[in-house]
Image 1 (cartoon, rainbow, N blue to C red):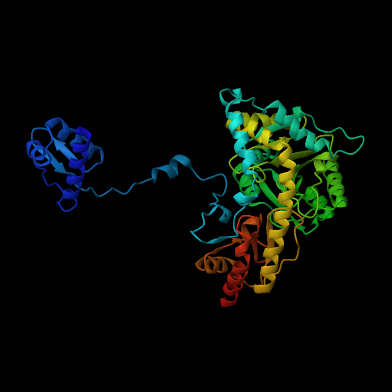
Image 2: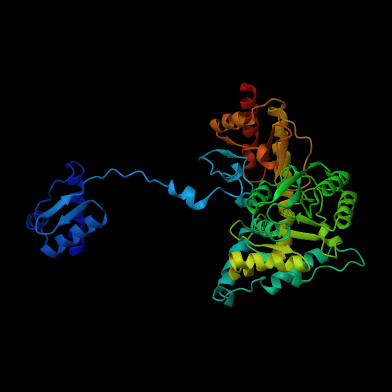
Length: 468
């Protein structure tokens, strides 16, 4: 009864405060009690609740008053400029792919597959089982759970040619998403102020990670069939770089897959210069018309540092990935990861391992391949029909995206805004270039949105382009 009375008093006083001037005095406790049929203890409880809400203030011996609204004082953070100094790297804003879409917008800007393309049943069951194990209560090993490390190593070993020594579980480091792995590799293997060869265009997150690590980027042109090995050779010779970051399999954003001859030639160049190839195999599980062929399987002397993530194929909520590196490079990367994050949640590792070792995982990947092909072709057909001036030169054999060239002279930022005003979100291509863009591009994700809306998306894109 007292609780009900206190609530009634709180609501009545709030209604009175809505029209009372700031600083107005509330009726005395006795008057409030009589008006609401409540005793002094109940009235005091109501007053305390109003104080907690910041609506009233009590002045001992005087009474209770409506809290006076205070004009907030503008904060002055100018002192931080001197304390922090100039940044060592450019401070990048959030990528366009990280924008939250408006309600009912058609989202072709995302970097992830839609929820309906994920193995939801497997993930939920795996998380439930993992929560019941000791991994839910203990610290995981710094390098990762041994069983998960062995699984990652076995995937590379399965593609190793005869005579090659595949990586072992010891060579695998489990990390919280490939983005953190890129940061550690660039810090530990390249180092601030040192050159890093990088494909152009390439993954914007790699550019950002290199930027934050203070690495000097050296762009190498890369097209539908990867980079020209002669360009890679010239870049190594001219800069003295000791690493080349690349995505040989279903590159983001272009979807390109290197021919086998290109991969062998680039590996030969890397070996000749005593350098590393940082192979980002982000789309290993996102094949459509071709199978992945990791170059790491052809390397047994530690020239390839390999990254593979499960984030996009298992679940964005399971930020589990792996770095495979050999020799001193592995030890340096491990030391960097241990200093930054110590270890990856054992529950997440156990759940990820559970998913990829279930019989249903292979079934899921077969269904995913079919769905990605369907969605890719639907979006490609819509763009070609409704926005014929948008040119997709290369149909990706895997991945999540179409890389679309716009007519020369197109103001891409203006087009993106025009699309957004029509509730269509697209990603401007400039952020996928480590230097100036080679032309006007858009990246269009075909995996995150309902394919039933692709026809409308093509119409909106074509209309926005025509108005410009």
